[in-house]
Length: 235
Image (tube, rainbow, N blue to C red; front, top):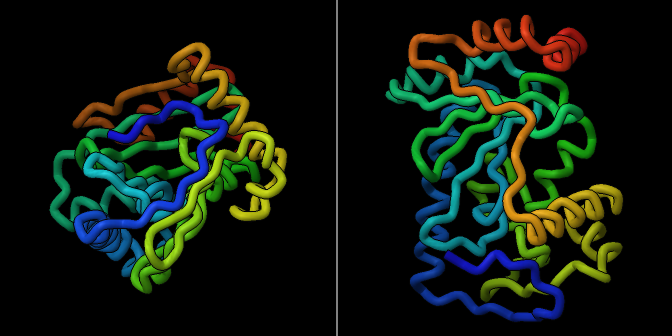
């Protein structure tokens, strides 16, 4: 797995080997299969991160996000209809100010995220920060610029990608990924803090039991937590 230490002075031009292109094609084909399930039902899912940029490795996650509010049971119904009977699900709220999200894990490397409460602009830009594409873009072979956990901008090209650290070049990075400078600086602050202190915890992380519905667990959480209750009421 590639080193995720924050980079400050690393400039590289990476030329992909045949093996790297084959791995990327394999990851994107799998992502396409997942997105296709939902696109066929008129939903708009996105793939984000290294699969959208192109700089994948063997253990790269296939991360799917829905940006619109969709009842979680509709997504779960589509998954069950396509043979995904055993789903590991969690409700996660990173901070008291963040949106509440449902995470559905198809396996160790494949995750679907559904917002339960409204995504604010900075929440949406988080996915553009890393690079995101929708079904048709993926099908067309589109790759987009994005910033990884090293705070390095990955810019795809015909032979691979170029990369440079965004620290000290935040304005340029914001233009490349088409998001606000505020979001760039917020993400930079979080990742620098993580480098210094190690992994930080989350405000809420609740596993959903096999025989429980997402709605049942949310109702229980709302009954015992005023912050969650307020979020759900205002969604």
